[in-house]
Amino acid sequence: MLVAVTYESLREGPLPIVVAVDIVLLAAILGVARRLRMGKPDALARVGSSLAMAGLAVVFWFFAAVVLLEGLSDRVPEWVAASGTFIGSLATLIALPLGLVLAAVASLREPRLPGWARPLPLVATSLLVAVPVFIALVPEGRAEGQVAAVLSAASGVAWAAYV
Image (cartoon, rainbow, N blue to C red; front, side, top):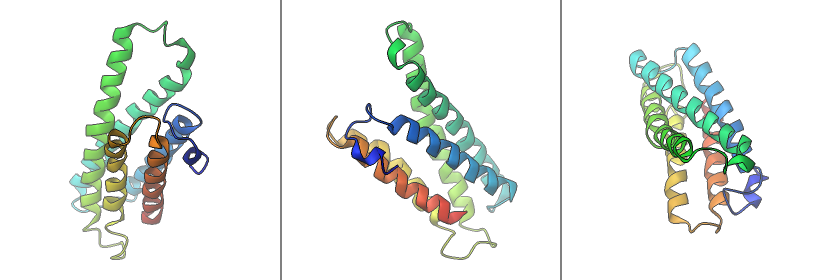
């Protein structure tokens, strides 16, 4: 993530690959939390983690397609690109945040966690949800990649502290 902070644009450098690695790590954290049955009520934690995992899977494949089809974008039909962007946007902006919020709310009542660790998923989710907001506010090519990298890294630190 530190390498990605040096790039100002989301379209240059290693940022898409770093985001893909972050997605895999977040999926691993959610998988461990689910396996340990963390979160009360249990149904809320299960629904939240399932929705978040589905969102992460779609976002991962979206980033993989962006990286793999970088030079082939003129050969991909427009409707395929538009559909992929729409589905990726739904996963990124609705399914993933909603799932993470549900899982985070469930962690607030987890008796096995110390008091300081219970709100960490909510803090991490807030930082992750702030990424698209700040990207929308920062003019293109003016540190949007740095903003995304810093907020994603802070979210990752909070998720790592939770586990």
